[in-house]
Structures are given as C-alpha cells and as structure tokens.
Image 1 (cartoon, rainbow, N blue to C red):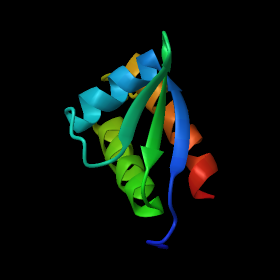
Image 2: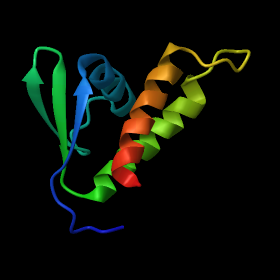
Image 3: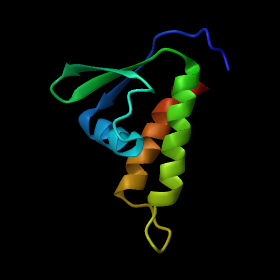
Amino acid sequence: MNELTENITLLIKESELAIINEIIEFSTDYFNLEKTSEKKYLLTFKTIDEVLDLDEVIKEKYVSKGFDVNYNLNAFGKACEKLIDKLYIILK
C-alpha cells in the first residue's frame, strides 16, 4: 500500500476504544489517540498501512471471539463489525 499517506483520522466512541484496547492490548504501534469529548476519541494513523494492520488484527479477533458456540454473533462480534465497517470506509 501507499506508505506516503499521512494523518488518516477516525472518530470513535469510548466503547469502541475499549474493544480496540482489548484487541491490541494497549499497544501504541497502530495510532495516536486524542480525547475529543467526554466519550469520543480521535485515532490518527501515520500511514494507510497502520490502518490495514489494525483492521487485520480486529478481523482475526472477530473470527476467534466474535461468535458463541452456536456460531451466533455475540456482543464482542457486533462491536468488531462496527469497527471493521468504519475502517472499511478509510480503506476503500
């Protein structure tokens, strides 16, 4: 992908940040984080590759943890789907 893309931003809710932090285990390698209001955050990515990396990690966790024993989508899976949709808008 294009390494020269700069300052890609994504506005997320506090609940979405909690899911991301659970998935990436509070790693700071993917984005810079800025609190914009009481329950909203702005993620800033330096390159599109960072967005792709985060998207991939979320999808891996979604597949392994997003469904119950009967393969029904659980709350974690629904939250992952929302994040994947938001990242798709950036990546398309």
